[in-house]
Length: 403
Image (cartoon, rainbow, N blue to C red; front, side, top):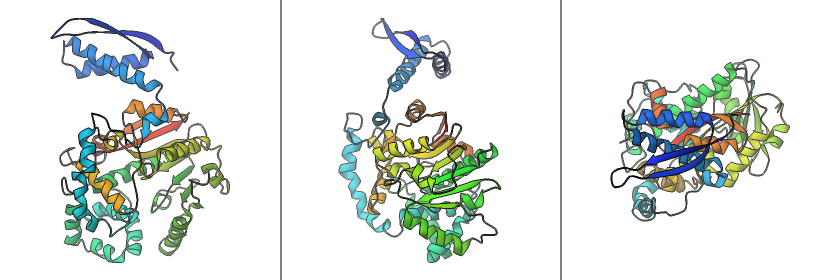
């Protein structure tokens, strides 16, 4: 790693007065180059003062995160500040009025069942560039036969239901396509890991994940970890729907990771901690209190050989905290609460913040993606739109490598 150096950045103030102010930051040469290049690209040609200001702002941001602890980077966003006062006030007053209609709309399906129907929806209606999960419909039809028939018949009722769910301001715009692109992102990550020689894939909180059956290859072992009752139900579902001679079986690990360490849960299986492994946690992290997220990352790190990979999606801390306002997120929070669940945390979505967070657990090589890049990557037929959003904009996605 390049040694940190002391850099003096002097910002020349303009307009009302001219003065020089020296600011000193601890930055590596590579960081300096990145700040200078970004500033030059962002500022108009010849706007020297704007470029200097951009360098100063970027340098200050990186410097403030160098020593950031876990609690600063991942928390429940509960604190009230002047920057989030209006959003917090809305959440605790006018936002609650959404219950007048949400209470009737959100009790019909459990969250994991609802996400399963969303995963199949784009495929059912032949939308372009949809995900490749051809087994999800089998699970859906077995668990929710009446709903499955409507999907298979391409019923207008399903389209009406989706329009209602994604109605601007009142609903959760972009939620169906969020599930779609998230599925594709994890599929791509699993496939890339196997292409690169990784032979173990650990799926944490597997739920109705089908990758062990769709993507498995000879010599690659999948491990599906879930709560004991969920794992039992999944095994029964797999046995009844997927012939063993056609779909290879993962090793099912029935464990409550709030009570059992990941390494202990895997110790009873054929898992080899000396081999490089891909760990995935899809749709999980934001349902855990911050302390549980810290424990999970610690356990994954201790079970990872160098070169192992980690993939998960998370809620943006700026949204959870209320620094930015997304009506869809406000609706989502209430909908989840109505199902007896809660979203407990957000993670600072700035790339340098995510890198700092995962470095605390020995991971590097972080790649962070947001809604805009996901639309560009997996929905090339669409232009990214913010109002209403093409994909729910308050989720981000990160992959990292154990160092």
